[in-house]
Length: 275
Image 1 (spheres, rainbow, N blue to C red):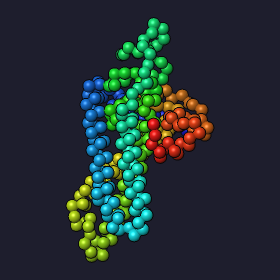
Image 2 (cartoon, rainbow, N blue to C red):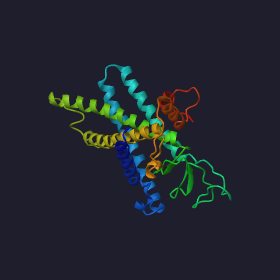
Image 3 (tube, rainbow, N blue to C red):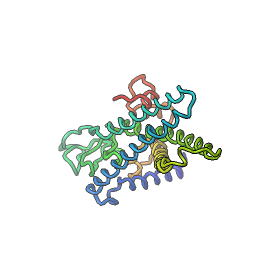
Image 4 (cartoon, helix red, strand yellow):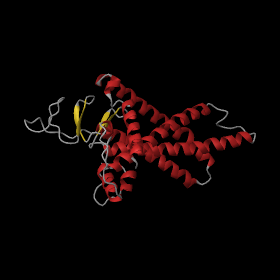
């Protein structure tokens, strides 16, 4: 990657990080940041619940009536149920995970100026969480929690599963609209175009597309960061030094980031929820 491209990427990361509250000067301190946390967490839960309810109460019943190949419907149902479990599972695990305990202040070595702990290398203090976070990446208002080594795997898997959920909903929604439009153009009554479901469908598509685009930006950002051995904190502090890049090194970084057990393939971690 050229130096100009890298500078541009880190510039976008810094701007995005400030928007989500990692520059606390914008939110005037941790008090307002905690309020933002509650608002963002509520929005995330409500949007996710709406999409899930629409998928199971409107889209799947329509698919059941339309699809002649019953096993095909069962596959969609299974994927929908799996994602309905995986998304809240990783959200809850990432939100509830406790930061790594750090030793108390010592007379020698680095100490935190905000709390009563020592400050090992790669540790950063979060004024919103009021604690030091080992390998802190950023404070995420959508989780109301700092992202660090204690929950980074669940955080990325949460993003990944939300992305897959939006792909599934948009795919089914596309077929949903195409089928009803064909029915309408052929002069028959359409269950979608002539009912209140159209309003719900338009609303669901709009929030799903917005969520889909956000997830793409997050995942692309973290693929770049993790593969390069960076964190968002590194980008904010302009720690942009070049790091070695090879397939084996990138794989090792991802294995560490996702806490992959020895001899386990990364694909299993992505698709099978476990502690």
